[in-house]
Image (cartoon, rainbow, N blue to C red):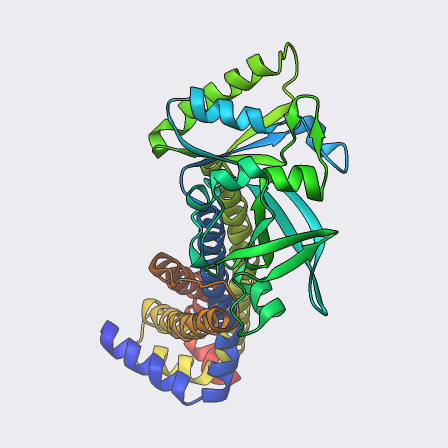
Length: 405
């Protein structure tokens, strides 16, 4: 029998039982839609994580107090880094562009009758360029502010809006604890990074922060929460990390375990990318199970169809149709059901990705590879699960088929 004629007959048969055909395809539709949506969401999660890491700045190293083991044990990691460590890194590591130490604390900020809790970051002028921030109004901190321990503050865009509304905050006084600080600038909106709203942060000179607000110092100088280091280019990251580690070991006279950790931005991105990639694969594999369930549904319906169409099969074989013709006929019907269901599922999957992208930060992408793979697999499933009913139909004896009908 001509293959084109077989396709026409299969299509006619399926269209004559629209409800049954639709319900048979449902498992394949759900399976393909789930796979496409999960892969798209996974890609969106990877892009979201990459954007979050890149929002911290480019070519960054983070120097954090405490060894990796020590950071996992206590609630608060040991404070082993000081401001002079940051100065030494800036002066002695050639591949480093800029260094921005930070001393963080959470305090209540007051302006007249308004109070807000915010993260206060004591830092240096280099913070602006190292962490890729911009000033919307006024100015950022200067070295002179640090030297004089000036009572000045730069506000994040959201905390400025909450405290001052549409009023220009420049020159106004806010209070932190018992310290009155003059607003000298407002930051451009930055958004959230890993759940931390950067627009709710305020920035003061690190010397003012250490001596007047948190009182955190040591015999070795002003303690810092972490040090952000901007490297000249990505190729110099490992070299800079090696040099910083050796410099701090010499400064801290370390013999055994380091009392600090240097984290590489690229390593962080790779680690998070591996995690999101594994989760995407897990979700897609879980969703793919429904494809096999859909294949079993196709096999069940086709077996029922063979039973119901016994008379048709007997008549066709009686007028000369071969076993191969009957086999091809039922195989084509199975493949059509699975491929059409797969294509409909792809449409639903793409729609789901667009819907999730519209209401969440995960801007998922439509993976052409995932579409091709999912559609091919659904077609293969239809072919695989159509073998049993097709062979059963092909082996029917025409005399027995006509007599039983």
